[in-house]
Image (cartoon, rainbow, N blue to C red; front, side, top):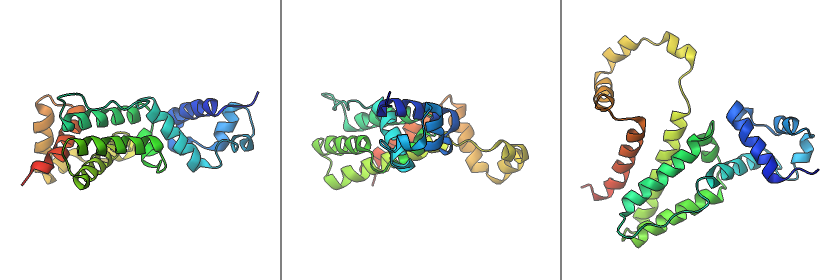
Amino acid sequence: MALSKEDILQEALSLLNESGLEGVTLRKLASRLGVQAPALYWHFKNKAVLVNEIAEAILQKEFAEIKPRGEGESWKEWLIALLNRLRKAMLAYTDGGRVVAGAHLSLTMADLSEAAIKTLCEAGVSLRESRLIVLTAVHYTLGRVIEEQSPPPKEGLERFDAERFKQDHPYMMAGIEEYFGSGRTVDDLFNDGLRLIVDLRNAD
């Protein structure tokens, strides 16, 4: 029986979760599916095309539809909620941030950006500002997720002199302790950063 594109993508997502982005190759995928690599070229001519389709599959699980801004809802809260959904979608898979960031031909990301810019424009924000706010917020979200999914290597941590680092970076450490010591979480950190981005429009 011929493999469908959907079957191949489901196996590719499983391979991604197990091996990360570097471990996703057409050869490994073909082996798991019990076929020769050329059999996959009918659907994906190279890894770049495969990665783009994996990104689409990841995003579509969260963005099969993009909900419009509700009546009385501020565009800022709508945008923050949208980008929380984007972060959630990427965090659901190993290296999801890198996959989506590298999918330069993603139609779902294009639809998401279009909907966001349109929403801001309809709320009275200029086209130029709308595009810059959305672009900056999306880049922030991608970067934040990639960082969250890129922990430091165990070998580096074993040699890391934490006490010396604290002595050399007192303001950084004080800021970290003040923030998380008050009960805030990494989710709060993400959202506080987003609010800084959307609120810059009103800054002097």
